[in-house]
Length: 422
Image (cartoon, rainbow, N blue to C red; front, side, top):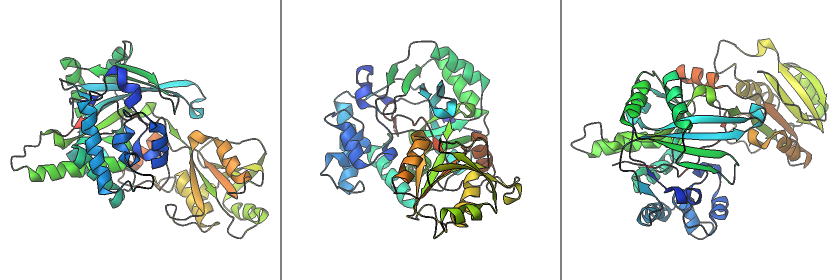
């Protein structure tokens, strides 16, 4: 069962939050972070993208960059831009967005900021659905070590829980500690403090009834945090298991509230085929219907939208092309990779092949059309979004999702709460 705890968060005073908060470190490059930070010395990018404090071109993996992260983190605390709460508590974090996946209607999802137990990651209570890379784990471990803190949270999902939803609803009807609209994503972000002892106990007890938590986004941060916790335990001769370093920061949302967008593909060529030959080859495995020049979005699982030569096509996979009882084989990312990208286009390694690129659904089908019409790409493929149930089923079965399968939106803002390891 899931073990969590409240913690004394380090966070910006209300008057500074909009200057401090930022996008996550891994959704923008160094120059984008440099531009977004601009002349704002309170921007969290000085801590999570500290290479911006050096000459352009400085590697984000330079040892000086990690040292700069720690220096900046201490500076933020010394200046009073980040202040630690006096009491251990949980936090409620709400994100309100308008997305095409929700019919462009306003939708709010409510997460709980918690201390997740590192041993739960190792023993499988915290379930993952993606592979991690050792080099990225090491990068995040260095960042955690040098700061002695989880600066940015991991994104979790948990099985829907009525008790927690009622508690969250009660807080959501009150004045939040933070309430702002982020300048980049245009989404509203709110935060409430849960400092009441009875409510804290309720949250802890309800999570203790859950057989599993699920990583939605942040697999490398989770792995790094668990490994650093394990290191600290080995270094402490008086280790008990309840020290703060045994926990890492996560924001956990009810699974039913999360929005997963399509994660689409664009390809540079047709592997020597003409458009007519390519469509004829696809007909072996798909029912193909021309949809015209207006953008066409897949309407169901196992249907794909192909943009080619200025027109949109519906591709509906034949029933005998996948195993409905196999949680991996039945995924649209698997079907498209196997029957289109590999079989017809010769693209076997999605992570390394330079002929393919990926476009998150937030950019819309217009971005697919633009990249093909510009001549940069030859064709585009839009997928129906993976469901949260599919992700949880795969994690429960111990399997791993294919690469580039999920795109969660909105992204968590960083800098609202930070968790120290002591």
